[in-house]
Structure formats: structure tokens, C-alpha cells
Image (tube, rainbow, N blue to C red):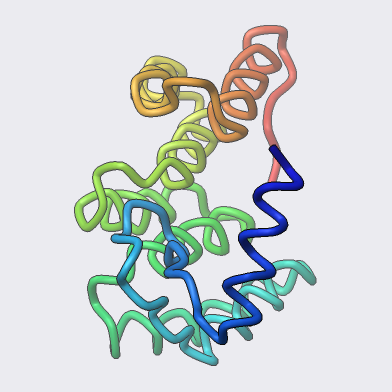
Length: 160
């Protein structure tokens, strides 16, 4: 089967044809070209990976000012706010991400983690239930929130 696929791919390449690829972000049409990434979004992501959460926030604010329907940017704003020590302040960003994209699994996971930081276990468990319904075959976000809830119940409180 692999040999057949490889042969087909080489034929397509040799003929100079291209196949449509799914755009990043899931749920996009196969024919939809990927939306260009805002350079501020890319810089903010890199800053978050480097744990410069507060530095990433102004860049993300610029992203949502230009693109108010960017659920990923709101989700990262929530993450950066929570990791900066303000879990309560992060809630509004996660909720905005979910208002834009009700299937944003990252926002459900992070919202659940914020609720755990605030000692609101029942609300964290609601987010886990939502992830359970969205992740039919399981997903990392579901596993991570489930583990965080188990840790919380075992007395290990989440930190920034």
C-alpha cells in the first residue's frame, strides 16, 4: 500500500500537479488555502514557548485587534495571562475563544486548568466532559486535563 501511495505521489510531482492540503486549524475545507499567520502571532507563540508570557500579551492584543475572530489568539491570551499568575483574568479570554469556536479543544483544556487553579473543581470537570464529547478517539488535551484533575483530587494543586 505504501509503495502504491509513493508511486502516486511521485507521478503527481513529476507531472507538476499539486494536491490540496488541509489548512491548519482543523475543520477547514480541503480546498481552503491556509490563512497566512500574523507575524505578531508567530512572535507571541515563540515568546510563550520561551516563557515570556507577559511579553507575549501586547502582541496577541494586536492580533485580536486586527482579527477579532481569531480563537487561537484569544486562547493564547488566556494561557499567557494564566501563566503570568492571573488565572481569574484568563477566564474571559478562554470564554471568548470558545464563543468564536465552540469546538476549540485547547481552550477547553486550558479553561479547565484555570478552574483548577481557582479551586473550582466542578467547572474543571465540566470542561473535561466537553472534551470527552469532542475527542471521540481521545486527544492530548483530554488526557492532560484528566491528569490535572486527578492530581488536583490527590492534593497536588496546580501552579502557574
